[in-house]
Length: 231
Image (tube, rainbow, N blue to C red):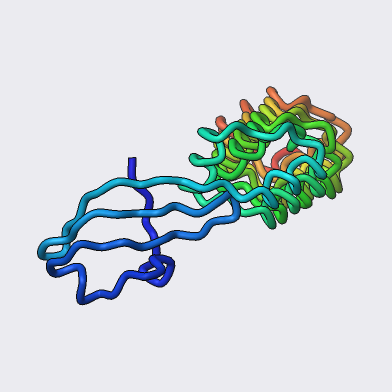
């Protein structure tokens, strides 16, 4: 595998050496230091890597309640550049970061502490790292989370994923609820997919029809308008 490394991180290596020279340089990471030896020719190089773990990193993990990783695990944490600051942030932001494996999973999927705090503000406080990753991978937005919260919904992670995948916005969720229909996640998806907007829902309530979500979808499919319902 390979990871991009900024040239400034390669301590002891000059750019001129990459055209043809034996080299010795270091890459310092929170988990430890990678000592690299080898040779470059015309910008391409190969060689060997040795690793020295950083005891302070291990002590910090232990202080956060994580089991100390073995040397091989520390090496991989150094290569992936998992930072102690990130570990602390996600540890404080979510119960889903209870193990080092879960922290690595969150990091690998681009979950940051800001997203975890967004989930917490939306009332989603008892999530697993896998559920958080699912929400993040599907792009479940703060708008949708806040809209569902404001409309009084308590939804499962997979409900949010389906809503997001179908393009249902937080604004749409709020508007449908404010128009008088307490729809399930599946009903919201069906209404949205059929192009039913809040005005038709509102007209159904004001006319006394109180049509369920399925009827509203069929009504819209057959050209039913808010004015037609009210008349």
